[in-house]
Length: 186
Image (cartoon, rainbow, N blue to C red; front, side, top):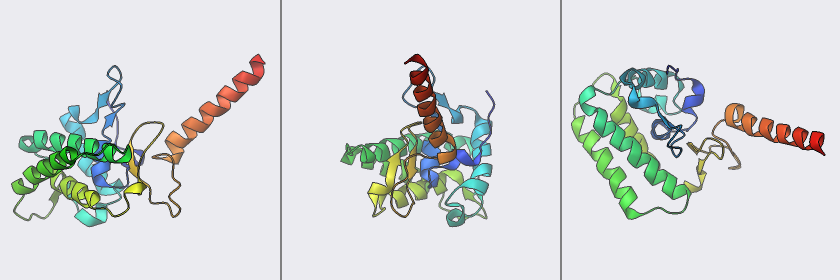
């Protein structure tokens, strides 16, 4: 399956959340799609993040994850999803936080030297650690349509969907369809 990294794929509001959201339909075993199963997709994600990530100014130009760091990067992605999802659901544990810190520290230790470009895995670790100390955890939400994690940066904290133009429209269109269907059968 081919796909492209569009602006919608960066609706999380933080690089760490965009990385965590790279698993589509995470909790549907039959339809689950891991966008990082394809090494080309991981490489292309870094390029797209340079364009679309909300945190692109924080990390500078990103470079792809090297093959030897791929497993540690996936471990960070899963620890990020578990920790922040549990926090939104009110089920956060010290173990989830410890797993996130462990996963981030493995990556940070591998990237001691400064380079002209920031490795995607190092930037993701920094993003996750920054988000873990975020002083407004109520702004972290889960989209009721696609189940992606996102940071609600709206002034009044009223954002409902990860992306209004995609998930919001789908939900509203479905509600309209159901109303029309009900009126026709009544």
